[in-house]
Image (cartoon, rainbow, N blue to C red):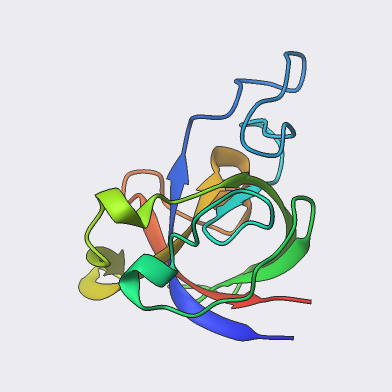
Length: 136
């Protein structure tokens, strides 16, 4: 088990609803279902977190992580890995995110489906939140 702290954003690259064909690196990504994109995915190439010097466990598609919103509430959910991301090679390793109306700088470690972001109490207009990630 590992406990990791960072930030999370939400993304819309998954198919719109569970009535369509799923997509993403794992082939199980839907925007209206819980899911997250994880940067160090087993059998899916480069460890994108390693690019920024961040060491995290290599995990398989479908692994369920416990994600806790460390922002303005402590909502927590068990969320499966459904995709690979964020692609940290094309991003700054650390980015600003809003924390209870205060700007904070943190390592963006995961992307959440829109549904997961909302389930954790995220504000879509803010776009990011601080998170604690617990791996199995």
